[in-house]
Length: 419
Image (cartoon, rainbow, N blue to C red; front, side, top):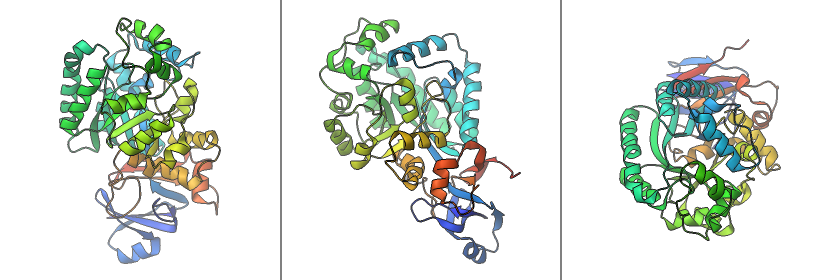
């Protein structure tokens, strides 16, 4: 058994504990409380004093594309969302497997060094799944599926469905879960979406889908026109295929296909009507909020106040390094705080980056707070200001450089010695 103590312990679901400690046995937390009490009650445990630090649940990055780390700094925002997608597709041409593997490893190292312990990763080729399996990080890896030809939906689905089954077998005994990710309404046909949904239900999978991200997507579904129809689909070889059912919103369209349920993570969710919000709340859909990526691509700002007001579980995601400058959730939460004009308190923002992320990924029974019975997934941040409020300090000052410890399942993945 191990007792970790620090100047502050933030259970998140309870008030901060000054001079607090955790008792860890194996992969789980067995007790949380004042340092003196835990040391007295468990003299047999090995003690470790983190000193002037804040101990809190590990950060949960609910949406990443680690394989796109290979394009870091290469895909700048253009005049539109479609410009960005076309540039991304062009830059990916000719990249080999090893380039993706190296980029994934670098991205994973960045996550771990910044105190992230769990990710919601969308993988298109499987490189990120293999990297995460080796890393020890916890996560849900959603296998991406793309295909607009409704007449070939069955054939298109065969390989990714088989890959998902194989990934699930490989993930046994690791902190990883495997899900399915039909990419978006403009890249997945109605029949393929139905097949993905049927497979999800049959295999009891979590799902993730990009939806309501850009004005171009809204226009395409409303009228079948705009840049997606005129530029993106021809460039991908799907220019002759008819658009899906028109005159609706992305959320209403997905709801009509039966895709939305409590196991579904809606990625971005920027452009939502009141009706959309009602559908999401009634369906108990979860949302990945990616404010820096949204700003980078110029697609707008998600209605966070309305999402939270309807009780829709929402976590923070960095998205990929093709649309963001870092994978640090500290950067993301600070940007969100500024972008949303102080909508939430420092404590509420840190809760969103931890428990909120766990709820969005459907993992809150296991992680997201520091309490007895939960997994020992945690991080520690050096406290640089004597007497500082720990939540305010984390929101204002925390950074990868101040992360002391990243632990998953009671195993240390990263440690930085104090200088």
